[in-house]
Image (tube, rainbow, N blue to C red; front, side, top):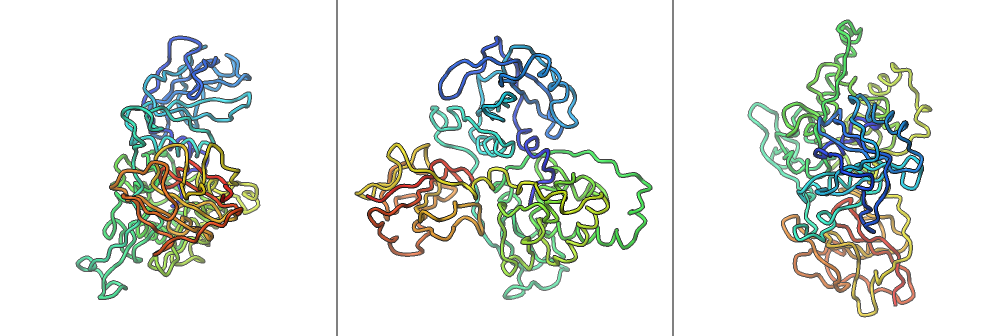
Length: 467
């Protein structure tokens, strides 16, 4: 289930951040690691168009001038009202989750401060920064070094499949005993003609990808010819029903999302498709790759597939025909997206990550001690050197070449380094191999250690040579 608007993905994610107010002097910004004061051209306080929350932007690149920063603050975000620019003053960083540094090292570098005091918000802030193509610098609260941190945060809820009798008046289910079986997953769907939220929990889905409400305005003319085209409207209704059968409903409808729909909203009107910008529509059509978001095989997902289209469907040709006709109506072709990067932000970056040699004692020692840096973890892997980096479940989290994988249940505390290769400590479960000890590491052979704070939150990912 891809987000709705590619160009505003960062805004949707970062929009959750609470109010950011200006500091008192021109060196109010401080580097999170070195405590060295950083001079800024100024800061911009504004209201995020999508989240309706306050945000603050610091202009830290050497190329920013008072004039250019003032001009940027006049239009800090697509559709936003002009912000309040304060020359030479940084955002307040006295109580923050961290900072998202964008265009790091370039003359147009800027930073978005993430105010907050709740460690449960750390995961969303970090992932949102990734969608902004930025580098997240966590505060002590979010890296677990403060007295109240402890590596906390909202925890990814692993997928579970539930089976139940069909609702009264609905047809017999396709599973054993006439039941309806549905995965409680962001990439899952129930049976066609049924509503996902009536057969699975949206609470679990909302834990599996950061969600933030964002009301996207759109204005379809009352005399739009599509409204009087019965064939078109019939297909539009079918696409809407397909969304209702899938977990997309949890974020892209009026009643289910806790803070309102996230971008496009199937309840906004008969032509809700107009809420998507061109890139967002291209993602749904599969013209822009969204493999990094993960997918179930259709035989395990009530026939719904998203290997071709980004929007899950049990009729690929029909869905593709509708979405491509809508793109054509906008005057677009596949060639217009030939150079568009695959969608997924940090999820995609994680899939294509190229590891470098381990440092600072990371890896597996001669006595089997597994060491990683960065804090406590919920997922730990030892893989072959040529293995792909683990991605999101259900199909990308155990790549070929996984020799050993340990998980921590969402109800248990994350685990600190070090531990012993092949030994399963209390609080962890061995997922690979399914039983027995992992293969012995061969001296002189290179391997890949991968430690994650949680799904899509890697801490250590590097290559080591077995002693």
